[in-house]
Amino acid sequence: MHPNAAAVVDGTTISEQDLDAVAADLGPFLQPGQSLPRQNVLTALIMQPFIADQLKSSNKMVSLDQAARALHQVAAGADTADDNAPGPDQWSTATKALAQAQVGIGSLTPGDQERVLGAIAKAQVEVNPKYGSFQLPGQVVPTVENWIDAKGAGAPGAQNQAPQPMK
Image (cartoon, rainbow, N blue to C red):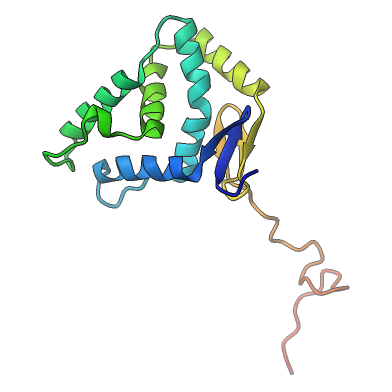
């Protein structure tokens, strides 16, 4: 995997810059103290092409321009937004793709949603290890290292002995 890749989905790279662009685009519209977890953004971007394919095949497609207009409406109405909310043409492609999936997902039937999950299950999804792994039904899950040493104190031959005080 390229070091600048956050994930690769069926040969298509989702870059760290894509995650940065979404954070830069949406960050100003979050409530103070609120953050946009990169793992959540990555999960949404991994799922986006599968959602878009299902929207298209069920004639419910939301265009990137429609998604950008929806983003603009939300940003213009946000409590934290100012009068200079980005116009539809000022959002990054990654942000518009994320919005496309979010706007369209509500129109998918349970059967459509099952087809999306089926397509994702067949896909080759490789996630940068710093984010963890992609697991169905569609979530990037952090990798948790086994920080408990099976030998107890961790010293060679410790054999589950408690640490001894220094003399």
